[in-house]
Each structure stands twice: as structure tokens, then as C-alpha cells.
Amino acid sequence: MTRLTAQDFPQELLELYDYYAHGRITKREFLDRAGSFAVGGLTAAGILVSLSPNYALAQQVQPTDPDILPEYITYPSPNGHGEVRGYLVLPVEADGPVPGVVVVHENRGLNPYIEDVARRLAKAGFVALAPDGLTSVGGYPGDDEKGRELQQQVDPAKLMNDFFAAVEFLMADDRVGKVGITGFCYGGGVANAAAVAFPELGAAVPFYGRQPKAEDVPRIQAPLLLHYAGLDERINEGWPAYEAALKAAGKTYEAYIYPGVNHGFHNDTTPRYDEAAAKLAWERTIDWFNRYLAAG
Image 1: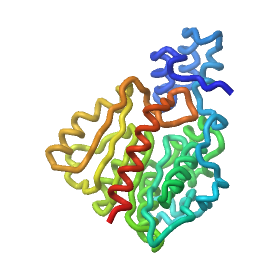
Image 2: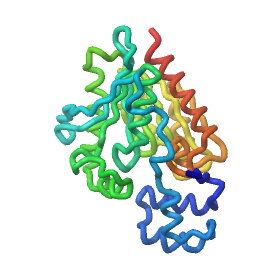
Image 3: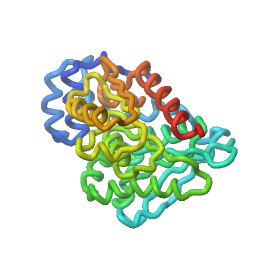
């Protein structure tokens, strides 16, 4: 199966898909406007299919990998929806408490890409918990488009608390040492918000996530590693104010803007994936968690 890349599409079309993927335009609006682009003879519907996630293209760590133990669990969320289903992955080799990482999905539920990210973390020696924010509406439906529609129906405050409850769940687990968080797109915003909400958080690594308010930054104690896509104007416009607030408050952080790549560049199931940037960002992420969660 041939993997298409961002270079196969006009940048304007990639930006149009980003608007659709984040609910800023409807599917019909996307199709109407995509029809004006010439992409290998594809129809507008074919363009949408080509840009959408294809989970057959990528699975870096198999669920049957002998180094990990994956299972689905339910954990309590008293300030959210009561209970949340999550994908918990443990490393087989563990000596004493193991550092833990909450993995927060994009705006479409716990899809196979996010489950794979959780397995990658476990393969690297961390306990990983990836919640399904769609639990209250029946869970990830197996289709990203439907998942996106469902997530728009979930109460946003309760949804945030469902992810915060995952942090608390790992912190209370005797098998788990220091706890960190990572997230992608919507989940990157949750990772930033968790850093504000939990002064005891060990580390946070948001990928192209919405930034917190500048006045909330002094509450952050967790070391932050922030990944941004160079072409992601929508998210990047909030970075200068965030950076200024982090500097003014004397916070520990590193930030990287990966040139020439699109929002979602880490997601290896879509053409927006950029292999070089994704690998470098992931290496930096594992190094960051090893430095601030595993050490000491």
C-alpha cells in the first residue's frame, strides 16, 4: 500500500482538511471546496479518503509484543462522567514502581493510533494509560469521522475532568512512580491544562496543543517539552504569549517548532505525517520522560 505524503497535496488543501478535521467547516463544505484541487485525478470524495487516517498503514508496536501487557480497564472519574474506559499498557520488565504517562487523544476518541502510542511508551519502559474520552457516548466508534462528531457532543468540562482523573488514577497506583502526560492536538491542550492543574505532575509533553492562559502559567511546576508544526498557524499563533509567560515565570521548558511540517505530523496514519520530524520529536519525548520521570 503506497503511503501518500504532504508533498502529494497542495498546502491550501492540507489547510482546508485541517479546518474540516477540527470542525471549523462541514464535510459538505470541504467536499465543495476540495473539488477545485487537482490531485492525481481524484474526486473530492477521493481526496477526503486519501487525507483521512488509514490505520492499516502504521502499527509500530503490536498488541502481542512480548515486552508489554495491554488491557482495557475502567477507572473512576467522580468530577467527570463517573467512569472512563481506558487502554492500560504495562512494561513486562519492571523493577519497583515504574513511571507512568497519560496519553490524551485528538478530537475523535481512542483510535488505533493513540493505542499504538501507548504501546510505544510501554515498550520504552513506562506504564501508559490512554483514556477514551468518548466513553460517556458509547466509546470510540471505530470511525474517526463519527468519533469527531461524538466528541463535539461531550460536555467539555466533564471531558477534561475525565482526563484529569486518569492522572489521579496513575498517581494512586502503587505500581507507578512519577506521572507525566502527553497529548496530541486536542490532547496537547489537555496536557498543557494538566500541567496547570497538577503542580505534582512530573512532566508534560504537548504535541501542537492549545496553550493555557498566560495568567495560569505561574501555577505550572512540571517541566514542559512542547512540539509545534512549522506550518500550523492556527495553533502557533498562541505560542509567543505562552513562551513569554513561561520565561517571565522562570519555568523549565524546551520548545521545538519543526519547519515545513503540518499539524498532526506525528500521526503516522495520515499524509500529514512527517517521518523525520515525528521520529525526532518522539526521541526527544522519551528522553524528556526518562530525565524527569524515570531518574531519581
